[in-house]
Image (cartoon, rainbow, N blue to C red):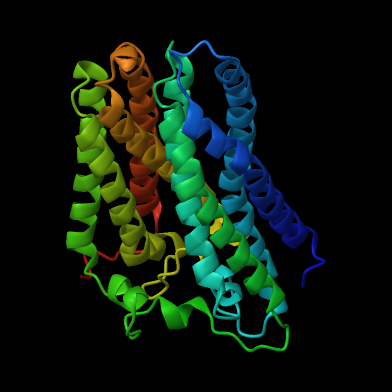
Length: 335
């Protein structure tokens, strides 16, 4: 399985990214230990020049890691035809015990990377780089272990794949008869779930609009964005997937990525992830906006990210409700 192009691309992206972070770590530790912008020493001048290189390197690695999430899911879906019993990415991910942990690690890296990039963007715009030490501490203490874990799980997952394995389809995981979390989400009543779904997304949009208008909802937007993401995924499993498939028992959140359903999964997941990352980014900026040199920088950046959150959640909500409206399935009346 290792020699498939998509798998090689994923492992190379993750492995080279991890190697780059490891190589940069000694310099990062030196920078964290000795950084002092008030000093005019030769070491400080060297560190200031080096921080541009390190920031560019880390930023590039993280952008690649974020993009790898999309390739990972796309590859899992395309590989389903190679496993007996698999109908979509779920069957591929269940081919061994490392599939879903690898996906969860990729998700964690995506949001951690987006948060770091927001900090870096704010730091680069401030005249005294007040977040330099913080962002590089986070790189070593949080991002490096997360990328290492993601790479390790991907290596174990792809290395232990075998075409001889008989796996299970998404119907066994996302069904009302299942006893795990997937079954619990699939068994939620569609009507109340739809109302909570729409209300949570509207609240997140309202917080984004308030942040744009008044600049006083950073923390609230961060919390509501995270909540909206969880509720949105729950809604996709509970009722939205049923309307897309026009089938009252098909709850899979992965089959909507397939061509027979018009790749509609990508249309809803991409704005959802972008809006969530932007909203959480606004919340992060709200925690550092009190720093003197960021008081003019953070509000401008937060406003831009709030626009991304507002438009992303709005597009996602309108698109998902449009899919419900246009579907031939009459679920709520039957309920």
